[in-house]
Image (cartoon, rainbow, N blue to C red; front, side, top):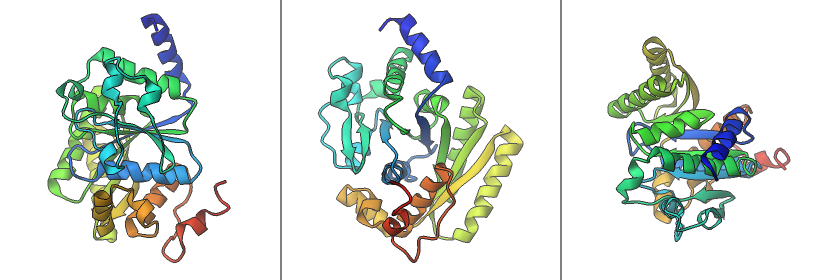
Length: 281
């Protein structure tokens, strides 16, 4: 495709997208970002949405590890011209599709502008296929990470109640605001022991973001501490697949409902499938 044709298609895509693009970042690594993306995709798919997870942690990919995928054709091979996109996409992984990346390749950690535009072209071509496309970005504030946030409709920052994680989450918000003009971000607090304390942490972050960045921070939800998350990593399955009624699974379910504009539900007394029955067909 010529540069001119790409530019025209890119402009049309910018103006009128059919899919919703969600970028998930953390600032700090190790706060549960990839688990969140995988399990969010799981519930959105269960709710009848067509979902694609794009592993945007291009140099240190691990979506494939969490899902026990055998990757023979990755996004790196696509960029090198060694694989077609159809061969890269993993279909129907727990109900959603996945575009895996690669680990241990420094050339992917800092994408050139031309390679990034080739990745954008993927979404331009797939736009009508999916309802939601989720970007699982790398940790930190590199240009590659923030570029995915810049093209997303919704930017989610996930962190945990620990000083360095909170500080790095703020640093991420600062960079995407000043570098890309992003002024609304959705907030998820992971590994929560005290549900009652979530609001205090969120309000502190919200006030600081508004005062110093003029960024609106919206609370998307929280994720309670759940030992089954560790088990799910060992089994290389989404925790929601292992136990849909665990604390983490219920919290992800309500976050998915929030994204769809639906009210949260009390899922403590009733299995999630019985709650979903007859609602999403």
